[in-house]
Amino acid sequence: MAEDIEIDIDDIERRMDGAMTSLRQELASLRTGRASASMVEPVTVDAYGAQMPLNQVATVNVPEPRMVTVNVWDKSLLGKVERALRDSGLGINPVVDGTTIRLPIPELNEERRKELSRVAAQYAEQARVAVRNVRRDGMDRIKKAKAQGMSEDDQKLWADEIQRLTDTMIGRIDEVLEKKQQEIMQV
Image 1 (cartoon, helix red, strand yellow):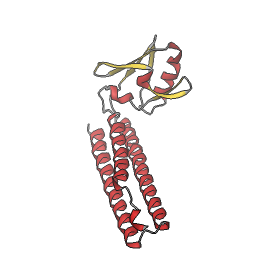
Image 2 (cartoon, helix red, strand yellow):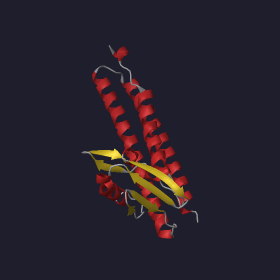
Image 3 (cartoon, one colour):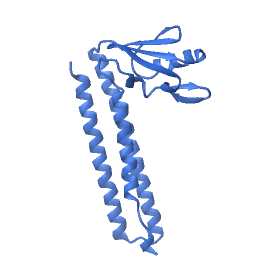
Image 4 (cartoon, helix red, strand yellow):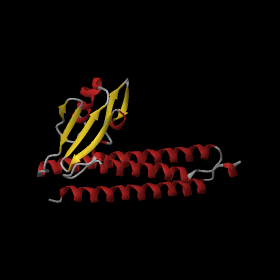
């Protein structure tokens, strides 16, 4: 009976890697002085009764190094898109011009750099929480396997492996965060 019990460590590792991938995408959206379409990728808009990514309701362009434009397809969503951009934490003041919203990218002052650094830290903490949730799920699977007859030695082996994965992933998240914060704080 105990022979049939298996913990899918590859699935746990894949899910933890997913948290890391998500973190990298979110950090890529934090640009340090130059306009980029990826800055607005994490923005979601309350449209048609659901939260939709900005790129599903508008076209995002970068016409010049310090400007992002958002061309909203449905004029009735213009206000919601503007509100989503204003509330996104990007620290950019949207300017509505017809069905186009212009996002002028300000020079980064010391205060804005610190604010972006804090946002990056929040993204990293969300990734750490996601990794810990995957860890908790893995530990719950071990407890269920114990009830099905898994030996204590196997329980310890799997728990140690899941903890090793968790520690490795948290370390990688911390490294990525530190690198991004250094990039943001460079003058």
